[in-house]
Length: 244
Figure (cartoon, rainbow, N blue to C red):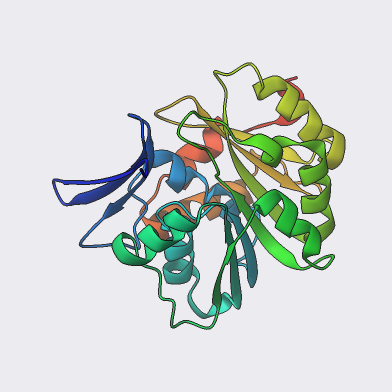
């Protein structure tokens, strides 16, 4: 018996994995919008890099991030490489949370994202999104040193790696230390405005200072363009060295 549960309320469609935790949510009338705050915050790396050409997505869920990326980045996107462990999630997403599968840029692979990434070429991706939790809040090998090393390998020189982490679990600080071991101090943390989630944004190259007029202006421009609080996110960001 499947643990997948889809509900609809007040114009939103929501996915659960056999628990009260929300795995994903979509506004039915505007499916390209990001309906959950932490998902919005996973776009904050746009403060540092231009729209990506090639994106690796670990975990499909309700397809929220890929849908947003296709809409927000438009023709800049050349490839969305999505890997999902559960075949039933892929089937459900195709029915209840559809992506434009007729778009040649979208590729969905049934497999383990932590293993699949090892088959991708070096310096391939501009952007890597990691948001893979099961119904018990486990993420497995996607917080391992091996996965972080592979992510570093497949990223372009100025690419970004964006992972959703939970700050209220015992594995949080060890996970940060493993991330820092691979990416050094080139990691920015964004605590969520509403939850215990923390977005870890990593790069092969150093990020700019977070308090310059130039980046503040970019935050304002992105906030206006995407109707999301990039300026507020910028104020909450800090480098990983401050957290360890």
